[in-house]
Structures are given as C-alpha cells and as structure tokens.
Image 1 (cartoon, rainbow, N blue to C red):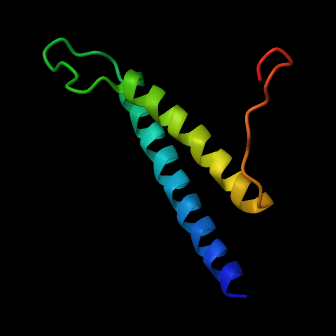
Image 2 (cartoon, rainbow, N blue to C red):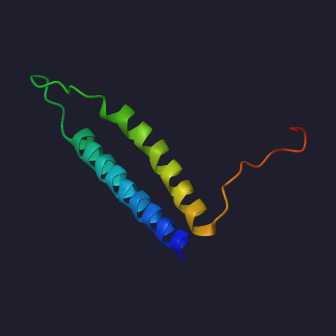
Length: 82
C-alpha cells in the first residue's frame, strides 16, 4: 500500500511539472506571435526555448506513461542493431 501512495505522489508531481512546461510553452508562443518592435528587441530566443520545452514535454509524457503502466519505455531496435 505504501508503494501505491508513493507512486501517486510521483505521478501528481510529474503531472504538475507537465502543466508548468505547457504553461511556459504557451507563454513563449504568445511572445513569438507578438509583432516585432525594432525599438524593443527580444532579449530571449523564444523559439529555441520552445524547442527545448517540446523535448521536455515529450520526456515528461513518456515518464507519465511509464508511471501509469509500471514499465519503463524502451527504444525499439532494428534487426541489424544488437
């Protein structure tokens, strides 16, 4: 029973991190879609931040899937790779 409680804590923490990542992604998307003002240059490269957040979101979703199924996701290997 104690393991189930710990897993749900990990699951909720991971879902919370996913929500933060999505919120940051949407905030960057809003900044990217603003019209460019030549007098006020952007100080952060929002497009690059969005790329890193996309990778983080995919990794977080994979972690949530592994928590829900109980099995770690493994990459599929081709027949020639051993």
